[in-house]
Image (cartoon, rainbow, N blue to C red; front, side, top):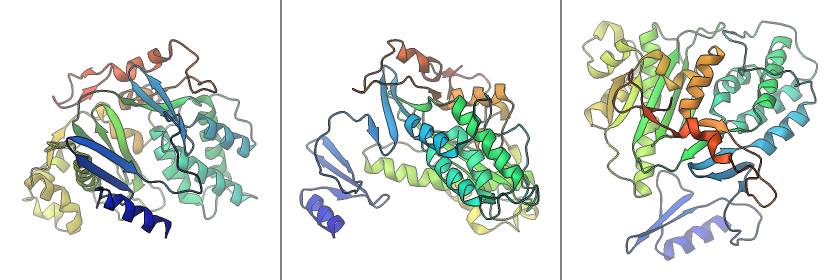
Length: 369
């Protein structure tokens, strides 16, 4: 009832409710845009000034833009874990680790495992580097084994080693949308299903990402990549409509980067009938969006594939290089007033904001060093 009253009031004042996100309301009057993103809770509505903390997400202000992080939430998570996380690790999971349902013995307290993985899932709101590991650990919620718990402890050590990590929303006037999609073929040892990973960048900043196991088995790496492209294309379609609601137009065509030439050929030309006749129709969604001029497909080398972070754990050098290109960076601790105590705070994200062209990527890809 409270929501119905609020919606009616906003509509009466000239706001338009977005069909792409029902919690979003936009009013455009005399060239001025007012945006209301509604979150409901039992609080009084009042102006609290510049936002520094909301729903566990901390916002720090720098000369380069905003850094979003969840330091306080991460500390509370580690306290709830009540295990030794003092040893420093450099990746969320051991490199090339493949977990199976049959490995190890049942743990005594599966509820604790489920609770911690659930909290890690919320931490991925500002930590794209944790998306793949959370997707992996979530597969064993039903019957977590000792090997899964050991992997969870490794992840908690990584979180402790990177407490101040978040990502930069760059204050750039580059209003271009681009997407990266990737897949790790038949990576699940139990089902042989592949992992889909994608990320969308608006300007130079990450705005939406996902790591998810594919619903069916792919017969080839090309098919797995093709399915990942379809998932990314669906997200691009939604993001373009949402941004248009906010007054951001002329986004088409959106460049979708993929590191598999065969998948690109299938998406551009469906004459490969023998290779694709078994693939469900919804996977050809990418092809439809190319024909509609919404998408422009581009190849880029694997080592520059940002979505690789969401399909596997790479060696630390490659892993950290990709994170920097994603805008993932460290944030200094603010004081009680919300001001950053370290005057050199803006320098912490210099590498993430100093974008330049990568000679091995297409002209549309802007990557930092």
